[in-house]
Length: 122
Image (tube, rainbow, N blue to C red):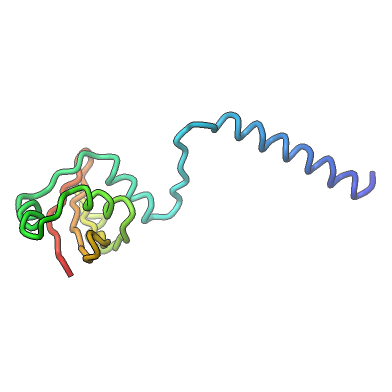
């Protein structure tokens, strides 16, 4: 069999496989979070999020709401430090922008709940 025929059969089978795969995955919420930062952010966002009283007071003083904080926790930059593997709850720092202002959250990530312990405005 000639090389061009082999390439043709390969591409034909590959395209049929892609069509079948697109048919099965159509409409499903499939995500590929392979990096450590993406996995931690997804883990934090899948849990119940609780804000410490000092964080709520800081938001009230700056006249911000928690929806901006949710966006930072979903799309922010994660800093993995030495306290991230602390048992039973790891601590993470997530940085992002709320209303054109840089904020840094300190998150305590436990098994069933994630608590925003501290917020710093830069």
